[in-house]
Image (cartoon, rainbow, N blue to C red; front, side, top):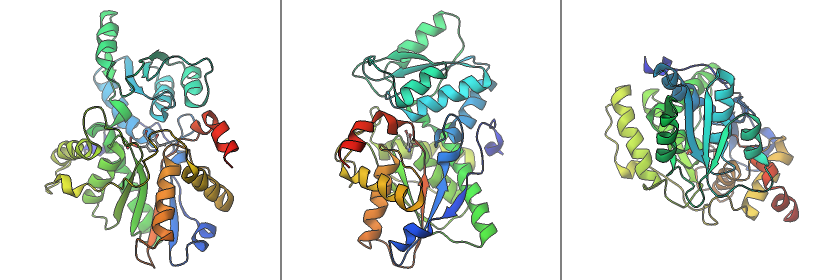
Amino acid sequence: MILENKINLGFLPTPFHSLPRLSEKYPGYMIYIKRDDNTGLASGGNKTRKLEYLLHEAINQNCNTIITAGAQQSNHCRQTAAACAAIGLECHLMLGGSEPDKYDGNLLLSYLLGAKIHFSGEKRKGEDLVWLKAELTKQGKRIYKIPYGGSNIIGALGFVNAVGELKQQLDDRHQKIDYVFFASSSGGTQAGLMLGKELFEMNFELIPISIDKAETVDLSLEQAVLNILSDGKKILGIQRNYQLEDISLVKDYDKAGYGIITENEIYAIKELATTEGILLDPVYTARAFYGMHDYLRNKKIPAGSNVLFWHTGGLPATFHYADQLKSKT
Ligand SMILES: Cc1ncc(COP(=O)(O)O)c(C=O)c1O
């Protein structure tokens, strides 16, 4: 089975548990959390699941050097650097912008994890990877290129598998979930969850919260998700014909733009931190959590629902945004 084509990098299964004190604040709802902030690889996050499949393929293709791209505070890049260090592959990261005077948050961790860091100026979504690949190939390295955010069908398999993991946890507890909220940005997590929902016949509704209003390289996020679904249904033997209309995406909370911290994100971080002692990251999970808060506060989903927040990690970026997080509080 294709879902077995992985290496083990993470602490899986991640915990699934209830949030009793948070639930008290939203009468009518029971809120649960899936702790992918605890997947390991230098402080956890959703990319661990993708990297288990991507690096399995890299090793199978006899590659010895991984290249990928992202923002300077990319969790994907930090986790890729950690995974490469753990299994002995060379790692090159193409990061947007120019080199900062001070390394902090994820950038600092990527550096400490031994990644070779390149800066790509204006191009923050991996446009320069073609050039980097050619350059390193000339040096005799065997390159495996991981797309922006690890979002292709191979990476998405991590989240197909994650649905099977959640199903087992729910079955063990005789528990049902009605809605799943999560942050969606480059599409791999969303596509994987959609394929997993189909494969494992789960009935919950996915509510992906859009994080970045800009397009993913040259595609809309919906189109990027659809492309992964089309690849995925073939290799997973899923019969369903996905259309663009099948891809839901809540765009109500991304207006400030990527990586811009507003009162919403700060509210979300403080709410979960002070009611449950769990930290969200300011860029992704805080925005998604704020979306869930808005849905529950305004009763946009039926009372009596069991709601899951899928925590996708990102903690190190908190330290990069320290000034905004403290001065606005
Ligand atoms: C913490 C965190 N949550 C969610 C996401 C979104 O995942 P995806 O890119 O698969 O849509 C990312 C991706 O960068 C992330 O770092």
